[in-house]
Image (cartoon, rainbow, N blue to C red; front, top):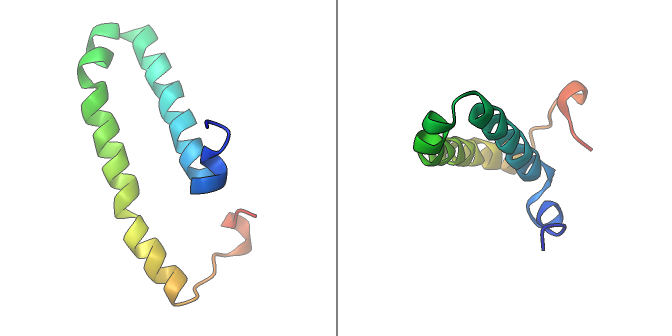
Length: 74
C-alpha cells in the first residue's frame, strides 16, 4: 500500500510527507515537549496550505499553462 501512494497521488505528495517527517524528527530531537504538543496543528495547517494550491493548479491546467522547463518535473 505504501508503495502505491506515489503512483496514485503523484510524487509531490510523497515528497511533502518525507520532508514533513524529517522536520518532525529533527524537531523532536531538539524539543520533544513542544513537538508533541504542536504537531497536529502544524500538520493540519500544512495539509490545508497544500490543498489551497490545488485550485490555482487546476485552473492553470485547465487553461493549458505550461511551467517553464527549469521547474517542470517529468
